[in-house]
Length: 74
Image (cartoon, rainbow, N blue to C red):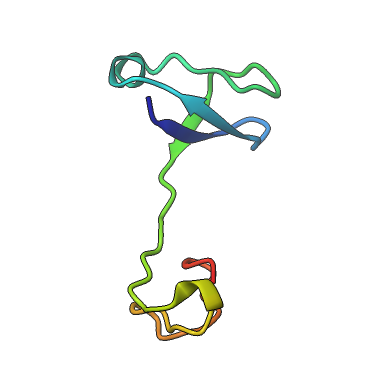
């Protein structure tokens, strides 16, 4: 089952929830911090680096041409 990130609309805490597709359809999730049912899923973006030699941090990110792109974590 994949993990999804939710943010409470009352206390703004972020919560990671492991849920099946069936669970996502039901949508009955609660905030771990305050117990509110008023939480929304956050669609986290992800970066994809297509450079070579990522292990030494010497490649450029293919999408932004930066050596210190936070999306690419290098």
